[in-house]
Length: 591
Image (tube, rainbow, N blue to C red; front, side, top):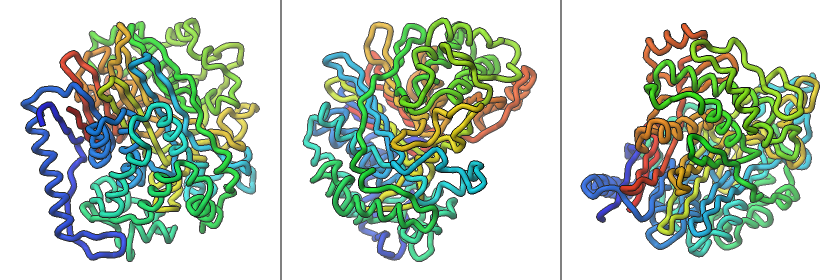
């Protein structure tokens, strides 16, 4: 056991309780004893790890302890980083159904230590062929209210996560594809304990009751599942078995594909136009990662249709001229500078980014050194900008207004480093909490199409993020890899959190580089987001003196709860330093 470590984030406790068997829930005393024994074993590992020092061989960090354990099993069997990420993701689709799963999409970055190469994989959902620019316009030609579009079939995009993982596994898997499904199938068939976070999400979401099949699972007999309830999901197990045996084509043809289309097209609210042809036409894409430098470190993240890399690298470039290392992290001056850099970067993001096939602005122009220098020079050390407009990268005239962004903070992330030195950063999502609220095959279907701009036109021009056939909506997911000045891998990082993901990951990377923090300190940094006219500071972390100082600089300050779910693996000289966000229930394992 020497060298192993398991650390659980701040929301990682399970409160086990008894309840009647309602078909989905089997909270027997025997099952509870098994779960209690497992959690006690985790505590023993923690205590042993504290005396053993940092792990050196391999490590996994994920959004849920059971997903982390699944990935750990794979690593202990000699699996690759990619193998472990797949096993963890399959479990997350079961134990965190409100955040990610088979019915959603994902982005993945892979580091091949042997050939020293970063590769990125796009498993973002696509719009059906029937989706036009007017997808979310009402009869009056105006954008529909957001909450009227989420629940039902119209918001569902063609799922992409399994096709993407299958593509990546063909290139970087070490263990057989079928072997990676065993942990998730066992949990689905034998039962898993409902976490505090899942129970709270169920209790807070009245829309669950609008869809009978979904209500039967999460609110059996009208009673919401509680933390500690043991839930069995036979339908999910059968879906996993189909994917295990047939690969991702199980989502294209056969009973599972038919179930998805029937669920979307016959939804009691907002039925959608997805067809079997849409499922069959989906293709994951292997894209070039977008990389840049910050204080001699190389930062790589996901390119379009994720806005993560562009927005993060812009923010860091605007800050490079400022000596943040001499400023207290979370102090008024540091928060001011970061907030202004964030406002400038988000203004460009909201105006110009979308599906790369529809953009009129080139990413290379948005990251051109001259453009970044000139735009970063707008930041004043003593005063907030009264208004921030998009810049004019390249030869494109500047736009005047930003898009609305309704993306919600419900996503999951996995970071893995294997014994061979390979690494994976995988971020997955169903978009909003419980996605479209539709279930097929025991899993939630996404509402990813609401990540499109509801208005197809902005400033008299077609919006780059407008809906369209087979288009991929803009995302903020930011799976990232950080490399030291000597080229060695330094960190694997990512987070859930909707459009704020970019700021969560950016500030964590700043913690590593500017203040030389360890993993635990970096993920615990106070969250700050600057966008449009508002500077958001994390509720419960911002002292009145900080808010007063920022207000004196001209900021409109808002205290905002920001529920990130960061996890990180830092490769230090003394070993692997991992951390899970104290704000959520993630965990880390390594040896």
